Length: 239
Image (cartoon, rainbow, N blue to C red; front, side, top):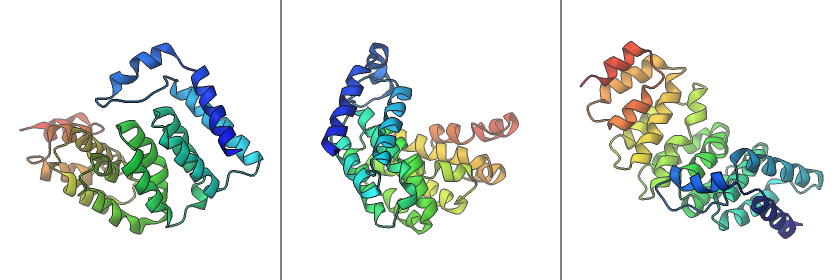
């Protein structure tokens, strides 16, 4: 069934190629990307339909899903990575601590653009961290990696927990570690994390920005203050 379902997914993706999506694919990325050119909403539907089929066949246990994810990821297609990461999130109730090394391997081996990074980290790795908070220490190690995607992942993993008001001290620690990172996508990543943290913790994030704004790159600063009221935004943007 495993080889069969992958082959059918690929056939469905080929049949759903949208020329406009295909032509605009490269506009969103500075890197070379491998895309079929299928609309995200369609890819999401394909992911859900096949997951339902796996569930009905009793094939939706984490061990089987992770094997399928690995196979999808090896193709390097953005759409197949999206399906893999959606499926990995679907089995979050089964996560164990050993899965961190699986997710780390996926970032190191298969993440090669911001969309793959964010799809994997926002939901799958973010849910894992909420379940096993001690692994935030591992995210801090990612901030020191030569791999730009691990560094971005260290921040965007905490985007959804930040929105819920969780892990504020650790969010500031990770921001400190990434504060002067040279990579634009890493700067945007931690700025986005701070922006989400500012929704439940406006004053604390404002104080953090004011304390660090001389060193903080303008890109990160602009992301971090995006949801502030106009007066606080103006204050933060002052030279």
